[in-house]
Length: 332
Image (cartoon, rainbow, N blue to C red; front, side, top):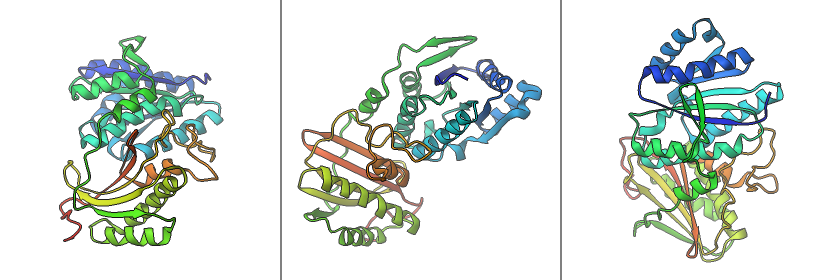
C-alpha cells in the first residue's frame, strides 16, 4: 500500500458523470481490500448499489447529514479511521459529497477549511478521498473546491488541479475579511490577573441568561478557559473578554470573544490540524504539556474564528443556540 494521500475533486453535471467517477473509485477499493466508505444520501446510495452490483456488499454506506455534523469532529474521526486502516496494512477509501454546501455561510467556510487542512492532516496515511461536487452547487463552493483538492477527475483521467493552493494559503484567504465589531452592549470584562475561578463564574452567569443548553455551557467554560490561558501566557495586555448573542447569521449563536494586543506567528495552523489518534501532538505544534489547546477549543465550539495582525489578536467562539428562541442576553 502506498503512503501517498490522494484527495480528488469529481465535478459532475448529472447522474452519468457522477457514477462514471464514483463507481470505478469505489470498485477499485473493494478489489484492493481497502476499507471503502461512501457518505451520501439515500438516493445516491440506491444509485451506487445498483451500479456496483455484488461489490456493494463490501462498501460501508453512511448517511451524509450525520457524518457532516461538525467540521473538526468529522476531520478527527475520519483521520482516526485512516490511521487505523494504515496500521492494518490497508487504506481508507472515502467518497464524500459536500452536503454542507447550503448551510449557514460561516459553517460553509469551516467545512471548506477542513477540505484544505485534510491535505496536511492525512499525509502518510495512504487514504484515498474523492469528493463529488455537483455543477448545481453555488459557484463559490465549486470554486473553493478547486482550491482545496490537488487533483480533479475527468472521466477516466485524473489531472493535476491548476487551481489548487497551499492549505495555509487557503486558510489565510478564509481569514482575510475582518470580523464584524462586537455590539456596543456586549458584556465586557478586562482580565488583569489570572483568576480563572472568577472568570469562569462571570462566563457562567452571562451564559445563564441565554437559552444555551447546560452541556454547551460546560463546553463554553472549558473553551474560554483555554483561550484566556493562552492569551495570558503568550499575548499582550490588555486582555478583554466580551460576550453577546448574535442573530445576524442564519443560525443564532452565543458569542464569546477574547482579544489582546499580541500577534501570532503566521502559518502556525491555529489549532486546525487534529492530533495524531494515538495522542501525539498536532502537526501545527499547538499542543504543549499534554494539552490540545486550540484544537480542543475547535471541538468544543460550533465555530472558532481567529484574526491576528498589527492591531492584535481576536479569538471568537460561537456556540449555536436552539432554534426558535430569543437571543437577547438580557431577556432570555
